[in-house]
Image 1: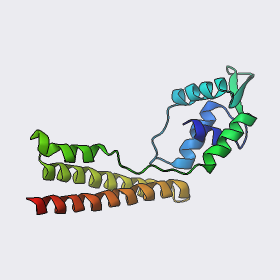
Image 2 (image 1 turned 45 degrees about the vertical axis):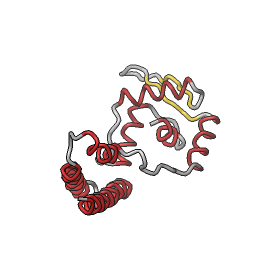
Image 3 (image 1 turned 90 degrees about the vertical axis):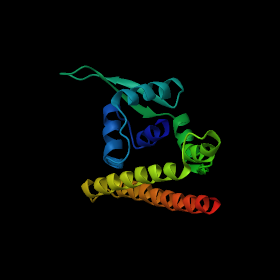
Length: 171
């Protein structure tokens, strides 16, 4: 949450509730929505670390609000973030650990595990399809997020099929 908030503040100063709304508008309903408390806690941490600065702004009919802006250190952190590549293959996969350890424990059948996981992936894919249909057509970012998730799910389903074929050959 830290770096996405910094990225939003790169456009200009904003308060926490504005940032929450901006994230929701940008990413749509497919992305887990942060609560406003989480936003303000993160903003406090970013301020303590010197990446942003907050300024109290008086409001006539409401309590004061705190508006945050990016510092030079925050801008540098953001530049570094955009330069980094994501190198996270799914080698540490919880499901695969279950699949690998099931025969040693005698507590679960590998094919049953695969079938249960397949059902979960298919249900998730159906839910994402519903989200895509309900999402605002103009929000390309949200649609790309949903499409990416669905492509990952399809790859996971293909991998489950491969696992099942291999395990059935061993029997």
